[in-house]
Every structure is written in C-alpha cells, then in structure tokens.
Image (cartoon, rainbow, N blue to C red; front, side, top):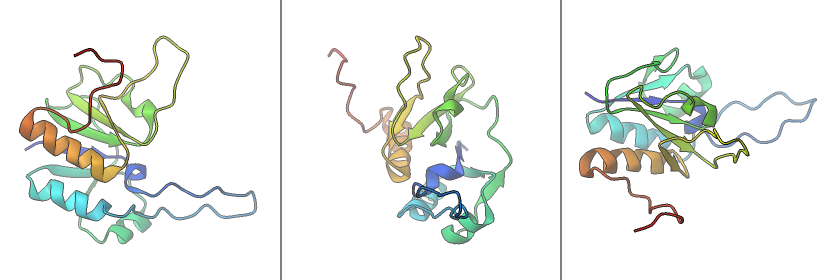
Length: 148
C-alpha cells in the first residue's frame, strides 16, 4: 500500500495576517480538503497527517491517522504533500516524492530547493498523485522552458 504524508498546513487555507495584539487564528481546512483525503483513502493509499493541531482534525471531521514526522527514507512511491519548500531539501533519492502546495520561493542560490511537483492547492496535489500513479504522468503541463 502506497503511503501519503501530509503537512497539515497543506490542508489549510492561508492564515490571515496577525497583528501583535491578536491571537493567531486556528487553522481552517481548505474547501475540498476532507473530500480529497477521503479520495486518497478510497483509492487504497495509507494517508498520514503530520502532527496536526486538534482544531484542524475537528474541522476535517474525518478519522485520519497522524504521525509525528515524515520519514527520512521511505518505500519507493511514497508521497509527501507540503506547503513548506524546505521540506523538499534532501529528499531526492529517499524514495519520497514531494509536492509543494502554493507558490515556490525563488532563490538566487545555484542550489535552490525544488520539489518533485507543484500544485495550486491540496485537491490539485491529490489529482497529481492519482494521475502519476495510475497513468505514470502528472496532469500539469510541462514547464514553459522545456523542449519537446
């Protein structure tokens, strides 16, 4: 069974700005996040949410498995969906394929971090996983600078 590890922030709507006098807002699941998790489970994936806050679990209203961290190495075909680009550092060759939710930060460094895939939201990331594993290719178009 293929495993999918999910960064809890990848499931959430972006947090509104917090002013110094305000308490940080509780994470709110993005529209469609619960359905996408359910789709992965029904397709036969083992889904693990990484150290989620209880309020997020309550908002999803699903019985999901939780883990304290993503594995440093994994069986080939295992996925990590994250909203933090730094989670992709050092994952090449670990068996863990990565999908970044949201915009990638551009670095001037030659060794800038790249995830294996990028998606606009959690639902799109799930569709990429299903397409990649079923058809052997992700649904997103090739990069603009690719030749072919």
